[in-house]
Image (cartoon, rainbow, N blue to C red; front, side):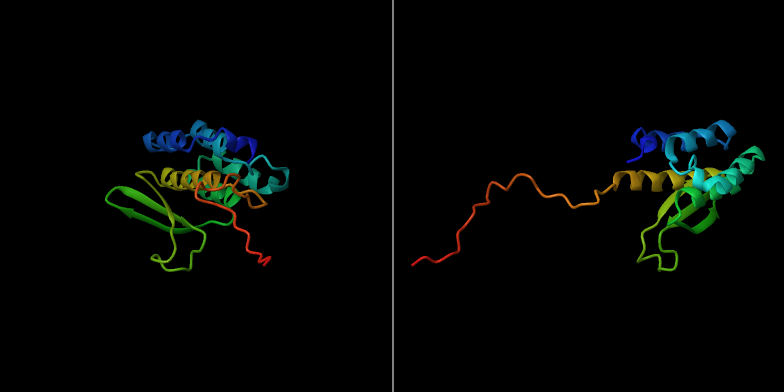
Length: 155
């Protein structure tokens, strides 16, 4: 796991985004600091420069979409909807699958950029939990009901 995500607290970030009324520069930089591992990458200099320009211009929804593109290249926006004063944003790895077949991650907020960032934080929380070693692990202790049996017949 990257050193950035070792201190990542998805519950605290999610609460911070839910309690915010609008995106601000300090909030966006805090999200990048807490949940982003690709942003400081030298190989992504064009994309990070674009994101920095969007933050400087306070184009928060565009900045959130650029952050999604940079940090979650395998995820896509599946749905953005506005209903009864709230924006709903769904992210998915397989956008073309029907809703009932694909599980998507959703974020919601009265502000579009915060709904996008909430969905982003949810995906980051899922991927931080789902870290898998490159080599499968073997269970170290046997079940108490396990008893080795010799199947050779020496008769």
